[in-house]
Image 1: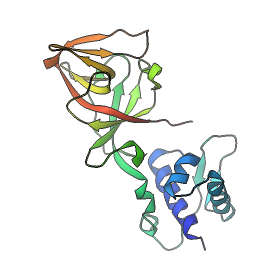
Image 2 (image 1 turned 180 degrees about the vertical axis):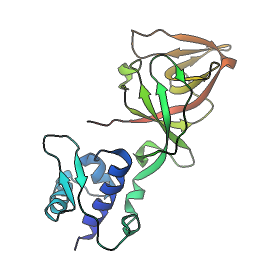
Image 3 (image 1 turned 90 degrees about the vertical axis):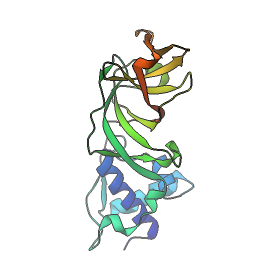
Image 4 (image 1 turned 180 degrees about the horizontal axis):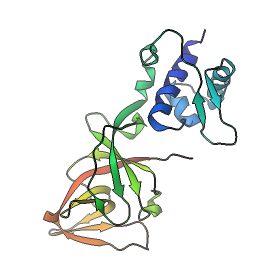
Length: 213
């Protein structure tokens, strides 16, 4: 028999790993099950591993696998407490943080993200970053950009922008009366200038999810 907290963590781990192909960080686990210390998470993980429910993979950061299911129950219905700190949003394709690429390719994929990255009454989607033009803002190739849907952005904000050529890119935006400038955060890339009517803001950056292999 697992304790309530052990069940909460196990359900959370199962759903997170199945959605992200990587285990959550100790900080994410701590928030998910409402514990005050990472040492408490360490004890829960150790107890789950001793009982054969999970296995930590040696010499790999944030790597564990589910090795056993809870008996005779649907894992998704045991406890929904993980929903209080995480949310599934659509993962709808790729976005360029370099030269613009073809517009978002929508899929049925989802990704689980911390609710701390989002606000109520707003809609979000995830986009996989390609390219290095935003590295000075801490955005790297392979990251998942969490985008808040909106058709406008304040100057200086990082936004997902659709161009007249049906291409999309992630850049810092600066607007004047007639122009919009798409500004990279990497000196190796050039600022792109467009007429305001030639681009559409798809959303603004709310956060970044990074996977460690």
